[in-house]
Image (cartoon, rainbow, N blue to C red; front, side, top):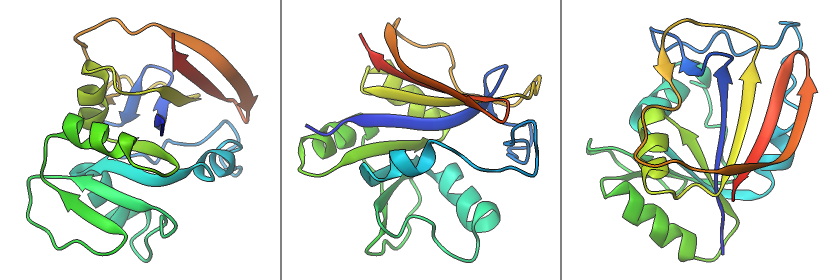
Length: 176
C-alpha cells in the first residue's frame, strides 16, 4: 500500500512561513549552498503530490512562476475554488481525508503532502500521515504560519533517519 509522506521544512521554532507567508528564509547557515541532500532521494519514490491552494499559489506566483517543477508527478490541489484542471495539476473540492484514503488504496508510488499547514493539520487529526520528513532550518522566526497546531490526538513517532548538512537537520519519523 502507498505511504502518505509529509516532506516539509520548518524554522527551529516550528514555522513553515513567516508572518507574511514568505519562505525566503529557507536556507542553511551557508546561504550560497541551497543543496537539499534528501530531496532527490525522496522525490524518486513519489508519483502523487497533495497541496492546498495557498501552497499551489505560492509556487505559480513566487517560487516557480515560469515552469511547474513537478511534471513527473500528478499534483492535487485541495481547494474550494473552481479552476480548470490539466493532465498534471488537478483541482479537487472533496473531503481531504476521504480523498487521501482513496488515493492510498490505488496503485502507485508514495504520496507527498507538500503543504500547507491546514492540509497537514487535517491529515494529522485523522492520523493519516505515515512518514514525517521534516527539515529544520537554523532560523528562529518568532511568528508566522505554524506547522503543527493544536491537534486532536497524540501521535507517537519513531526516528528512522537523521542527517545534518549546512546547519540543517533532516529528520525522518514513522508512526509507532
